[in-house]
Length: 488
Image (cartoon, rainbow, N blue to C red; front, top):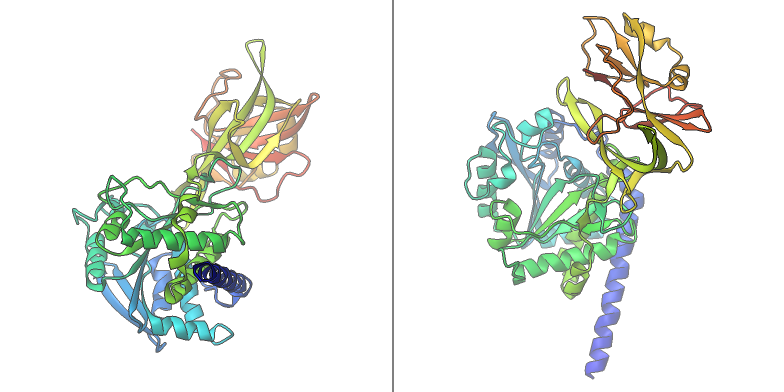
């Protein structure tokens, strides 16, 4: 009898998992029906979502409440849907430059007001659960696309001290709700890998620890089981691209304390996906992950998931770089070396929060066989040298635009000199760097943290240039280059 019961439970669990995978797959293919089309990049502000929030007031399934203000008096909203006993609380963009999940929340609002083959799920969810959304905890940070708030305080280190108005709003809302489940929604570095692999950690989960001992209480166990269930569902969409965030206890953080204070809390970190700089594919995955989590909470399917599933998810590792160039020959002081060169890129805000440019740096040199690049090239047999500055002066950008860039590369140049006080930009979209001064050639010195500007030759002929860490095939120079930089 017991054997039959165990077999029945196992078959039932497999059936439920198959149904949940099918649900996630259907969401994947139907996503464009729900994507909020007014949010098309990561760098939106409160003013961009206010019309969307106002629009929700006309939908009878939502209630919209202003629950507080930021330090610069921008409103913070709580949006509620459903009337069920189980309470689910989601908060996003506590860090102002981490907006991927915020976009997904507005996609979910569109989904919840839909009328299609998901109607049975909508009705069941909204009858069994009440869902509370705080879509932008840090509107001041979002305004200038920075992590911290107006006082330069990290709100996610303010759960206990309560120094910030945003932190107080979040804590007061949490206290008033006493939610069963909480979703702490963030973005992480795109350079995290899922374990020691070449695969990026597209989504990283965590059931935060409640103490330094990392005790597994019933509250934390429920979060672990739900994450394990989500891992099984999402692995069918992005196999090998799921990871766990570090589970070290952080006594000042909201997620860790919310877990300790009785809400099963799930951290979701949005990482990187190749050729997705605006994280729109990862936004889609957030949409699927959150709705799949709601389904599992509503039908309690997560309860049968063993804790081992969570434990077996690999941790984030820092094994990725933006560009890795392998096995190039480099000559210095008459000696020839074969090296790998790893390059990383940093986004620099300019002209407000809407515009940015990339500034690249040499991250590492040597044997990088344990690292992987989003762009990864084996240039065995090719020779690399540092780019030089063309000695002729130019007096306007239009002069530089008319240059033969291929010829410049073939002559070893990656930089040009402009003698113009009217030119004061931080970057250029031309496939060349611009400098305001010509310095004496310092020799072929490859250095960590330098801006990577190289010429790569094969059998004496220039094959590639690297401008500010971006590789260019000299036979197909792009008409629209990501960006060169202004060298000072």
